Length: 189
Image 1 (cartoon, one colour):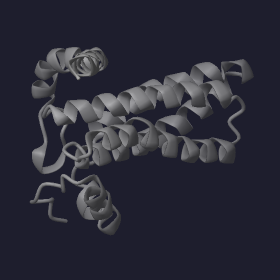
Image 2: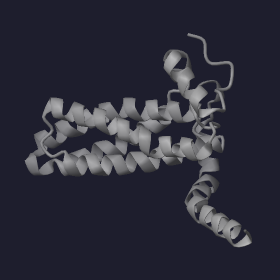
Image 3: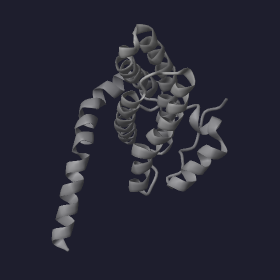
Image 4: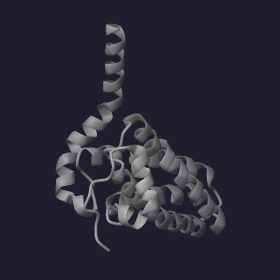
């Protein structure tokens, strides 16, 4: 299967449409094993811990189910985030990446865990959603900065680790900078 040779559309609606029309071409090459590995590690531990009260066997089963689910979900959300890294309007794209994608994955995750009979879902799902939301936002932000990319634009782990301190600082300062910018623009008006 050939990799994408053209950049994804910068318009959010066009980018979403392109992914729906041709998911294999738009989502498989940039499938994010980096996001998948991070997601699977943290979310599996969360489900293991929250299900320990039902015994080690149930906790292990919940952990394995979540790890497998998170590998696919994290990689898919990473691939979608990469396709949307330049999409505009920025606010709508941010909302979709930060809340919409984790929310959709939460519904699938609930179905999967209900199907296998995971006993204690509430806390695990809540923590998983919060983690997925923050990670999805961070991954998208990092991709906008040229890190954590897969497919034809793939970056190396070495590149990503070198870039992470600056990206992490920038990510943590997004909200304060936005508030300052809004306050400054409202006082000027």
